[in-house]
Every structure is written in C-alpha cells, then in structure tokens.
Length: 556
Image (cartoon, rainbow, N blue to C red; front, side, top):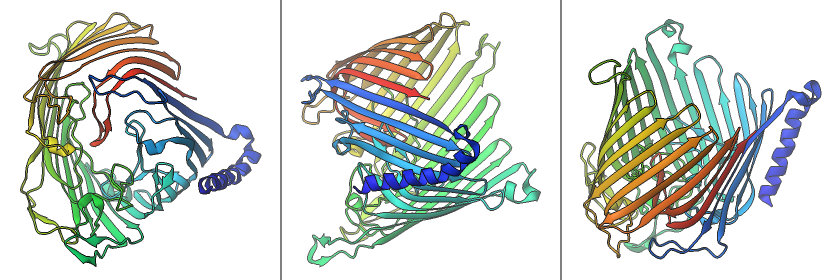
C-alpha cells in the first residue's frame, strides 16, 4: 500500500512538472525512451554437478525502464518481475511491481531528484548507491537528492533517504553531504595551468533505532549501540603532464553490527592510485588498506544488500574463463593490497612488432589480511592492527597478455597467468590454491560481416576435489571454444570445460544469438559450474545449473 501510494504521488508530481511545458511546447516538446530486458532459464536435475530442478521448472527475471524527458524535466519508472527468481538470485526478489520511480529537474545551477536515485561520493568509500542487475544488487535510495553548482568548479550535493531492500526499504535513514572543488575552473590563474587539481570531501551518517543486544561474555549487560553512525572522507585528483595521482582517505565511527561481531572499533580506508601514460605506453600502481569499513544502513543484515559504501577492488577483472574461476571478493572487514598494471605497444615494422605491431599487457596484484592482535570480543574494540603490516595472504596473481596481428585478417592473443587463492575469503578451510593458466585466442576476420574465433584454455592446479568441501573448481582443466559471427546479425558459440585430473565435471554450452537494430535475442543450452560471479570486487554465489537459458534485450 505504501509503495502504491508513493508511485501515485510521484506520477502526479511528474504530471504537474511536465504539464506546463507540454501546454507551452506541445507533446512534441518531450520524448520517451526506454529499454526492456527479459532473462530466463529452464532447470534440470544433474546429480554429477549438483544441479537441481526447481518445481516451477522455468525461472524468469525481467525489467522495463521508461524515461520521459521534456526540457530540464525528467521522469522515470521501472517495472520488475521475478517469477520466480533465476538461480543465484535471492528468493526475496520473488514478485513483481514498480521498483523505481522518480522525477528530476536538471538545471544548469541546480538539480533535484525526488524518488529513487543512485549517487556516489568520490570513489564510493563512504557512499555508493548503485545497482548491478547481473549480481542481483540494487542499493538505490528512496528520498531526495540535490546538487548545487553555484559557480564554475564548485559542486555541492546533499541527500537523504532509505535504501531499497528487495521489495521493501531498510529501516536505517541515510543522510549525506559532499563538496567538490575543481581549482582549474574555479581559479582563473590555474585555468591554463598544466597542473590539474580537484579536491573533495564528504560526510555520511546513518540513523537506526536501537535494539537490545546482550553481551555473551557478560549476560547481565547490554551493548550501548550508537543510533547515529558517521563516516567522512577527503579526496584529491591531481594530474600533471603525463602523470596522475588519485588519493582518498575515509574514516567511520563506532558501528557495531553482525558483520563485525558487534565490536566498537572505528573503521578507516585508504586508496592511492598513481598513473603514467604516453603514446604507446601506460603504467598504473594502486594501493589499498581497509580496516573495519563495512557500512550498512541496517546493522543486523548480512549479504550484499543495504551497503551504504563500496570498497573498490584493485585486482584485475578477468574475462577469460579459467582466469576468472577464482575471483576475489573485497574483504570490507580488513585487507591490504597492491596492484601494478603496464601496457606497451610495440611499434609497427620492427623486428618484434612485425608489420602490424604488438600489444603487451602485464598485470599483477597481491591482497592480504591485516596484521591483527585480538583484544576482546563483542562490545570491545575487538582487535588492534598494525598500519603497514600484513597478515595471511588472501589472493595474488600475475598475467601477461600478448596480442599481435599475424595478417590483415588474423589476430592472435596469448595469455599466461599464475594465481594464488586462499579459500578462507569464501568462508572455507583448506590450503592455498596455486594455479597456472595458459590461453590462446585466435580471431579470423573472414570479411566485413563474418568473423570466426577460436579459444583454448588450460589450467593446472595443486588443488584436488574433496567431497566434504565440494569445491567443483578444483583440479586440472582444459577448455575449447568456437564462435562464429556472420551477416553482422547472427552468432553461434560452442564451448566445453572439462576437469581431466583431480576434478569433477564436464561443462558444455551451445549458444545462438540474433541482433536486429536495438534488439538482441540469445538462446543457450548447457551446464554452469557452481561458483561465484564477481563484478568490481562484489560477488554473489552461482549454483550449478543444467538446462536452457534465454535473454531478450531491446531499447527504444
């Protein structure tokens, strides 16, 4: 009832906002755009890989976004349907209805949004309201968001609202303010300077009513849980000639929650990013330290929903199957790490580059836990951590990618990688996994409308499948893929992943797709291995599946 009332109020507001413009300019003064996406799967039982058939057999996720624009006024609605949610999506999404709705005024000096909205302060370490439909994640805010630009180079944002929690909204109230100064636009003497400098700062607080939380160590005492929790951050973005430096530091007050076992330790996070680039060469170094920075609007909720903040990952987001078999999920409770990335383009008509040149891409990263000492349990600071020390290794990798055109129509990419993965980051016990990966990717451009691609992958691991742990990624694997794109509209893909030693499973897939204008239809049949789907350091479990999948997307 509350949601229906809210939709009615927002729709009425939209009409009141755009009606004067429509009367003055006619209906042609505005236009409607949108997109539709429909994904589904047919489930089957497969005891070998652990796939189960759901009683309803067919699972469906769908959404339609409609946007109306008229001058400086914008209004939007989103309808979603999960009948029933596809495998890997939280079953609390089950249902259908209007999930997002808003009206906005987007002026030159002032922008106002009422309804559901997404927003981010800096890199997101104290606030990032966003969605990722493939992860089943939507932390949008329902409330008001205001941005003021009084002069060139100055932006001030203020917001307040409650976060989406499946079909409801979380109990916590989120409020925030952020300011950013672009000194090159603000100060005339710096307008032509080779030094580009932007400074920013933000503050976010959450309010949640108290709850009775007993201390197991002293059952006669209750925890003094703060009702208001604040987090602040300062940031800098600087560029000079070929160099760039981004830095952000965030600090959070006492925030006992189920995610940190209700300890009273304050949180902090530091991100540094140094870049250098010139024609044919670029390099990047990132450093991160995170300590107790889980920031949720509802203290008793686990999982990925109701996160107010977002800690960016500094590991490479791999696209090849075996390199992404062990993705790393950011540990908001505590981690420290480094990443280095170098890209170099070998010139054409050289001994190494050949006729068409060659691209080299090297990336390496290492993530570890904090070096901590326990000082107590619930209701205490929990632990102390050395600032520059490191604890257990969580993840490490190194990859080298070499891409070269062999002829005008043939391009070969060869990739080699080494990974170390600690299962403790996924809540499992066991030894470190050491993996070696080799990949060959050959693309043959037959003509302007026909492209044939071959991919072969090999993974060697010191891990072995254990029925009690039931990690079906273990063992040694091989993979082959053939993909054919023809007439610029159709594509067909056939692939197979096979655990040939110390593993379990044979995962084949066949896909066919058709694209016409802004509409794309894809059908697939095959098996999906149980594991994690990760994007940007945020992950969701994906159960094993066997059956037909389909996807339809269109925009207008």
